[in-house]
Amino acid sequence: MSGSGPAGAASTSGQAVAQAGAPEPVRQVDCAIVGGGPGGLSAAVCLARMRRSVLVIDDRDGRSLWGQTNRNYLGFPNGISAAEIRLAGRRQAARYGTRFLSGRVAAAGHDGDSFRLRVEASVGDIRRETAGRVANVKRDEELGTSLGEETVGAAVDIVARTVILATGVRDNFPRFLGWAQCVGRSLFWCIACDGYESTGKAVAVVGHDEDAVETALDLLDFTDRVTIVAGRPEGFDVPDQRLADLRDNGIGVYPCAVAGYTNAEGRIEELVLDGPDETRLPVEMVFVYRRPTPRNEVAIALGVEVNELGHIVVNAEQHTNVPGLYAAGDVTSPHDHQISAAVHEGNQAACAANYFLYRPVQRGTGKEAC
Image (cartoon, rainbow, N blue to C red; front, top):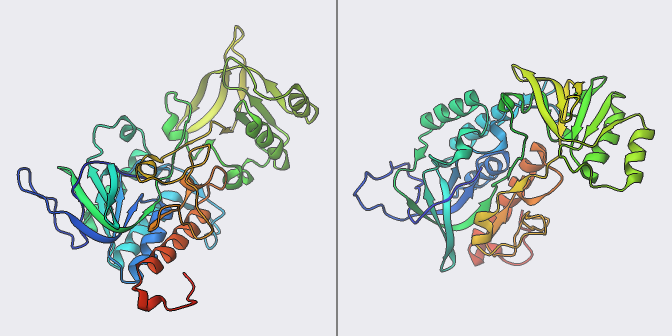
């Protein structure tokens, strides 16, 4: 969901990246949005409709390209995939003049009262080989081409009057043969998004901490067929009383690692537990609780405050501690990782950034930011 690289940037006029050897002019925009998932695209739509020049920088390495179907987003009673929301959002943002740059922000700093982002090609990063389902990435690339998206060759510099960081998180899924096809089909991370679909099913929680314990107990609202596996040789990192709470509520407790995930066509069928007996647990859904890593590298380079978990600290209007710099989506929160929340925060950030861009005479006295 984010980008990084040396000085040189993308323009809102849609001009192609300069050929090798030709000097690349610095490109200036009202707002550079780093991250092209639901949060970033929501911000782009709002700002572009306010007649601001907007550039979305994205490296196709975010959650919105996995295979999950979102069923708690208002207006889609039969559900809609995150990848489809992303495609629709890109078309909508482009309709109002948003431009797109495919690349990764490798360096960031201040340029007077503005921000300078150096964007480089994201090719060659090992994460690019495993980010999202191949079919979703391909469709996104094809749409990008039709919308005039530029792909970074030589590094480019962007100078932006405001920046919105919607860089998301990196999920720490277990790696096994076929794992990428399982994400969003039988391998999940959010009970608020996908707990309902576990109703009556055999569900396993893989995780060793209190978050995992609470999730296993919460899943009892949907099914009585719940087990929890520590997912590591050291076992659980919770008091014995919490393990007793699990057992007292009928949850099977396994303080061991997972040796294998038997799966076919994106469906996990059983967990093979690490141990001499290689116990096999039949499952239909697996919720993994390994704390995701916030993609905060650009934020830190720009002096943005982050909390003890690495998430960007923002106020109710998505302001960071740096004037003119805002953040939205999963990178701002350790808990509410939902598309609906990201879309809301993206809109809030855009309203705040737009107010920041007003001339003093436009602000007057008492005008609200949104």
